[in-house]
Amino acid sequence: MTIKICDAAFEPFAEIQTFQNALALNGKFGATSIFIGTMRDFNDGDNVQAMTLEHYDGMTQKQLAKIVAAANSKWQILDCLIVHRVGDILPNEPIVLVAVWSAHRGEAFEACRYLMEELKKNAPFWKLEKLATNEKRWVSKI
Amino acid sequence: MTIKICDAAFEPFAEIQTFQNALALNGKFGATSIFIGTMRDFNDGDNVQAMTLEHYDGMTQKQLAKIVAAANSKWQILDCLIVHRVGDILPNEPIVLVAVWSAHRGEAFEACRYLMEELKKNAPFWKLEKLATNEKRWVSKI
Amino acid sequence: MITVRYFGSLKETIGRSNEALSVVESLTVLAVWHCLNGDLPLAENMLTAVNMDYVARSSVVNDGDEVAFFPPVTGG
Amino acid sequence: MITVRYFGSLKETIGRSNEALSVVESLTVLAVWHCLNGDLPLAENMLTAVNMDYVARSSVVNDGDEVAFFPPVTGG
Image 1 (cartoon, rainbow over the protein chains, first blue to last red):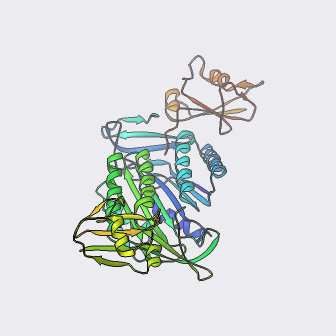
Image 2 (image 1 turned 30 degrees about the horizontal axis):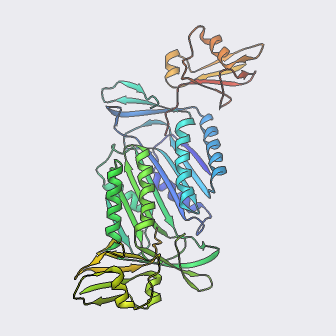
Image 3 (image 1 turned 180 degrees about the vertical axis):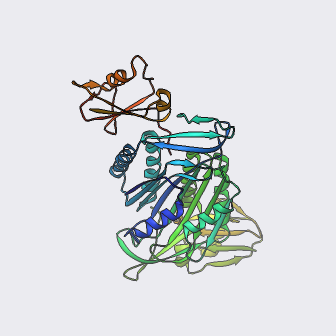
């Protein structure tokens, strides 16, 4: 179970591939469910040129670890990987990656969805958008 | 919307990356939901050494196209990719890949799950397992 | 001429994968089965398709159609 | 000594990100806020954490704790 906070652009498919190659789970997992959140150039009716992702270093890791522990107690998960970007981000760059490996698909799908929903609810990140007009705007909870 | 049936091993992350690079959707998608089904070396209490995936060529593509059209009518999907393996397969090789790109996560998660469940229900594939004992056994619906 | 196809374990059970049937009148899917397989019952869980779409066994088959019989699918 | 931290738009609103508070007795989270921000109300939707866990505003803060105030989170 790995949680990574990274302050530079990451390649989600390379991250997953490298992580999976290192798992000693050949032939053991039948299902992998993955979610990738990517920065859009449009939000709430406005064009967005860039974004800054602030977080509460330490609390982020602590909350994500609690979420992963909760998912582990709910489903039979073989492994999972969470990567979240912080700092300055441009449109089309990945923001978050959640990947779950399990024996069967139900567990993988449900745990992956759960991890994403809980991350959005509890992990202390805040998005500050820079609009095309150069105006800065904090994203507010929908 | 692409559906591929392939009779040799495929690399799911390379497939997704190549497909995504070719999409003219930079900055437009905020969510990607992916499912990968992989062959296990154990099923129904027995060790499995290999598998042959038979399908009804033509009907497979027709049914998958119907499933994709149904998903498109239910959710705002920007694009999707389905890859399914046929022929002789070894443990740890990918069997199926479903990937969905959309603006928001709810659509991507739900459409990806729907595509997988409908594929399992309606796409005419049949798995013939070769057990560690060399016995051959058709997988039956759970 | 009607093309008839069998897949999966059913293909092994009956020992054939493909055959053709010449008919003078319209038949149901189930009648096609019995024309070619005599009294052998078509197990309740077997699926039936005409021209690559799932159909009921009571569905009518026309000249030129492709009819398929197969067990529950197990892909994915 | 209690460490107090502010994040996101709240940090901008009050113009500080970090401060320390020396206290002789235990205070609630909300009392810590008012000690440092006077009558400024802590908006209802603001979240509060002690030692990196979410807590209620009525939760008691002890010497050495880290208290944080921030708006609803928007990651992912």
